[in-house]
Every structure is written in C-alpha cells, then in structure tokens.
Length: 639
Image (tube, rainbow, N blue to C red; front, side):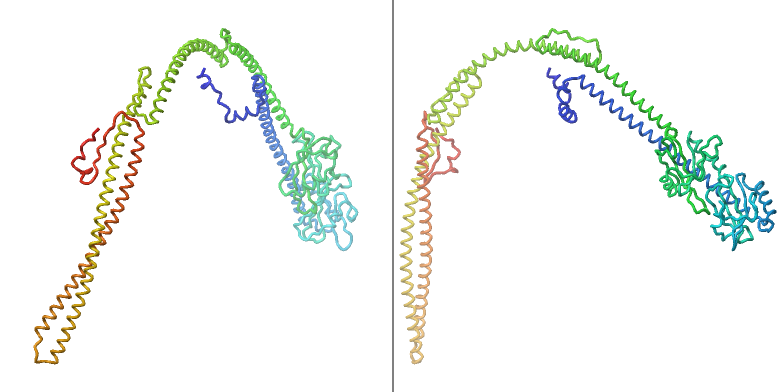
C-alpha cells in the first residue's frame, strides 16, 4: 500500500495540473464521464477552430489568387485598349502623310479616301474625312459620305475645331461619339503633310474593340467597360453581342466612386471584391479596374472589368464549404468515437469504484475481475492484488497487535522498575548534593544501563571524595604556609627598617664629618696663603717645607672630606634600597595574609563535605622547602 501511494502518485498538485485543479470545480473533478465529455468538447472545439482557421486561410489564399488574376485581367484589358488606340493613331499619322490629301480636287481626294480605307486602313475604320479650317468656317474638303464644303460646326465632328495642331506627327484623339448613322466611334485627327490648316479625321468604330474584351469570357455574366473621368461609358463589351440589347455605350456608369478610384489609380490595377449597385449589375459583383493611357486626349480613361461575386469566387466558396464540411465531419467523428470510448471506460471505472467502496466497507471477498487487457484491465488486476495484500496485512496487523500487547506489558514492567530506581538514585544524588559523599548506588543486575549509571556514579563519588580530601589538606597547608610567609616577611621587614635607620644615622654623621673636614681644609688653605704672604715679605725666612706640609695636610683633609661624601652617598643608596625592600615585604605580607584568608574560606567550605577518610595532598611550602622543582618533586602524593 505504501508503495502504491508513493509510486503511483499522479504528480501532486504542482505545476499546470495544480492550477487546473484549482480552477476546475469539484463536482466536475469527481465525475470521470463529465471530465471526459468536457475534454471531448474542448478537443472538438480545438479541431473545429483549427479547421476553421485553416479553411479560412486557404479561402483567403484562393481569394487572393482570384483577385490577383482579376487584377491581371484588368491590366490586360487596359493594355488591349491602349494598343488599339496606339495602332489607330499610327495608322492615322501614316495616312495623313499621303500627298494626295494636299490637293484641291475634292472628288479625287474623296476617292483616295475610299481606296485607302478599303485597302490600307484597319477594318474597324468607319469613315475618313478631310477637314480644313482657316479664317472662315471649318468645312469638309473631302469625305466618304459628306458633301464637300459642308461645315463642321454643329456636327459631332466639331471637336476637331477645338484642337490645335502644331506638328505634323501630332495625332489628337477624341472621346467616343456616335455618327449620324448611330455607330459609336473614336476620332483620330492628324495634320496633313504640306498644309497648315487641313486635318485628316479617321473615325474608328468601337464595336470591334468591344468584341475583343474578355470580361464575359472570364466569368459568366461578366463584362468589361471603358469609361472616362466623368463616368461616361465609352466602350461596352455587351455592345459587340448582337443577341443582347444591353448596349450601354455613352450612358453614365452607375458607380462614380469606382470611376474616380480607377482614373486616379497610381498602381497598375485594383479589385473591389464586393460591390452592390443595381445600376451596374442586378447582383453582388466584383470589379477590377486599371487606368488607360490615351495620348492626344483631354480625358482620363479607365477599364472596368465586372463579374458576379458568386461566379468569380465560386471556387472559393466551394472550397470554404468543403472545408467547413470536412471540419464538421472530423469533429463529429471524433465526438462519436470519443463518446463511445468514454462511455465504455466510464462504465468500467464506475464498476471498479463500486467494488473499491465494498472493500472500503470491509468486504475483502468482493470479486474483482475484468475481461479487458488494457490499462483498465490492469487496474482491475491491481485492485485484486491490493485486496489480497490487504488480507495479508490485516492478518499481520493482528499478529503484530498481540505482540505489541506483550511488549507493552514488558515495557510497563520495565518502566515501573526504572521509575523506582530513578527515585532511589535521585535521593542518593540529593544527599551527595547536600555534602554527604559517603552515599553509594547499589547495582542490582536487572538493567544493564541503570547498573552502568550506578557504577559510573560511584566511581565519580570516589574520585570526588579523594579530590575533596586533597583539597582540604591543600587548603590547610596553604593556610599554614601563608602564616609562615607572613611572619617571615614581617621579621625581614622589621630588620630592613632597622638597617635603614642605622644607615640613615651613619649618613647623617658622615655629612657632619664632611662639613668639619671642609672647614679644616679651608682654614689650612688660609694658613698656607698667609704663610705665602709672610714668606714673600720675609725672604730670609725659609717656609718651603712648612708650606708643603701644610698643603699636603690640606689635600689629605680634602680627600677625607670627599671620601666622607662618597660614604654618605652610598649610605643613602643602601637606605633607599632597604626602604624599597621593606615596601616589597609589606606587599608580600599583605598577599600572604590575603592567601591565608582565602585558604581559610576554602577549608571552611570543604569542611561541609562528609567523607569516610581524609586524603593527604603533599605540597611542601615554607622557608627552606625544596619546592616543586626540589628533590621530592617527582614523588607521588601520599594518601
């Protein structure tokens, strides 16, 4: 059981699981099926979220590809229109270089125009005209379908009069307009070589270029339109289809905001993926747009490519639906399989829980078997082994209980014995503490530890008794020695004081003698001086020997005075030394008296201890004793 509780632990409450256990309510933690269901739901939500995110990312990627293709289509359509314009500009410029157009024969020039249109001009050229201005009215010089001399003003071709031509290679381009017979055309005007006022006007139908646009080919229901900055539809792809009656050429485009963005676009193209405007299409649509470069025109052109959103992004929507269906299917399959596994596992765990409760209530005969061989089956086997182990442990516990009762009785008996011996030992120790060192503990042989304590205590008391006796002897001898030292010190001190007094008297006598000798020496010096004076006054009298004797006596007296002074100085030194020795002996006497007093205190204290015998502690003191380093220093102490 101990191994299971430690080895099969689920990791405790630390870390992330500890946080989860703190957050999850107890009613959830107590139910495996509920926890499993919550885990399934969380996993389902996670798979669903991953599927949705993945599907959305794929959808976004596919949508980006479609939009990129549609932007490319807008650029292609713009390039197509630009190439068409450039081709017509070039054809017009080449045609205006024909010298026949600089003549004066209108009929001849009209035939030349028809011949060139039929053989040298693009097939979508609707008509060609020669127009000449000047100081008067601007008129048609030659035309395929207009009489020469007709005025240009007031017709759809009067835009030519608003343009100025300064170079022969200059080609002006008009906006789209309808000819009198209803054909939408773009006019290209170029100055005729060799003239200053005559212009060749080539009108090109937009029907052909409208048929080349691919908006309807890219998406069913789609179309391409070319508009100018004011929102007028210049070219409508639907105009090229004779089966429809939806030509919107030269009508106003229904979304001016898109037109503004298209003509002011700084990049190659752009796509608005979701638009809704009934004036453009009757359903939600996407529009791609790109600017068109029109040299020689005063207008801004742009290409608008339209397609229904459900057609353009049909593949995207299909991918999105398939992704959603696949995600939902995966979540559903996971939930079904997980629910089946969870129900089976939960049922097995609930049955095992019931059997464990029976075991908890004391029924160790419960049948714990399972046909499963997985972890649940192993868990059943583990519980069966635990049940058998519990039986054995209960039997062992019963046997241990009986053995414990016997051991308890023995322990009680031993405890009573130890308590009695402890009280007895306590009384003996208290008697020893009061000073009775004759007490002893008697070993009884019942308990080895208590007997050892008694033997050690008795040995300690014996040592203590011996030490106490030695200390008593030592204290007595110290007291006697102290008194002897004190008496000797006092005797020596008295002698030193007597010596000091005697020497002081000798010093005083020497001082008096020194003064007398100094006086005699001075008198002898005075006598010698008088004799010298007398000898000087009486040269006939010989005082030489007498004077020498007197001087010798004076010198001897002076030496005697010096010797007396030295004797006095030595006497003073000896007296000072005697006084110092007397002072030291006073201190020794004081210390000896103090030592004697302390020894008395120690002896009085040791006298309170009762011992069976006294033990002598040999410690020789006093004058003349050999001391610690004497001949008896190595002899053992006597008892």
